[in-house]
Amino acid sequence: MYRVNAVGPLAGMLALVLAAASPLPARPDVEVAADAQAAPSGESVSTTGEANPSNAVTDLATAEEVLKPLRAFVGNWSGTRNETSGKVQVTREYGTTGDNRALKIMEKAKGRLRVWGLIKYDPTSHALVLEQLRPEGGSLRLGLDRSASSETRLVFTTADHDPEQTRVVLDRASWDEFSEHIERETQGGGVTLVSDARFKRKS
Image (cartoon, rainbow, N blue to C red; front, top):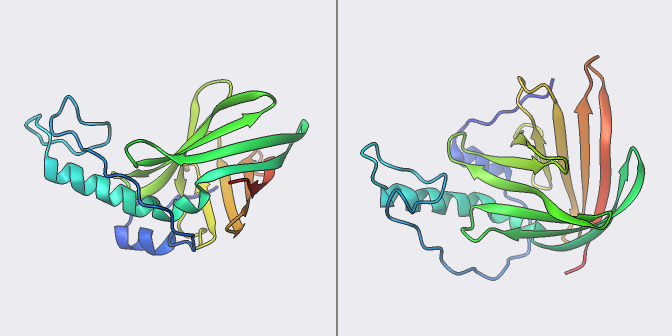
């Protein structure tokens, strides 16, 4: 079974994901809502029902700091993905969301453009989380496996209790090339390859 170590000190989290990435231009500051109704999802809210501006700003700053290494992926990519049905030409666009809390992944394959997934910081578990959106609907939530990850590798796995034990591995070979490997555990305990892709940077 794949195991996820999704809880731990923030310092350990930052030490793991410090990837070698080319610095990108600073983005504009994000305005944080100061009331409960306007506060975006995921911000800390006080028990009285009023937003706590201090906590909200802290959460936002933490999310931006943890996501910094992922900026190495920001840009446009093209590649080939090997699936059970054969080879598929794929283009990807990685970009930060408007609130700087997540990395949004857009994909075009087989003539269809869709949101492939989101990588974001989960303030509850203090870990990066990949939410992979399925073409047929629904999503799969995977947490960063810190014990299997490194400066150039990010490994996301589903929780032990998830019936679909899935593993997504992102390996950065260089600033302009990375691979993506997705596998799923079968009921018999074996592992089956879902897809394997290689991407080159376009811009």
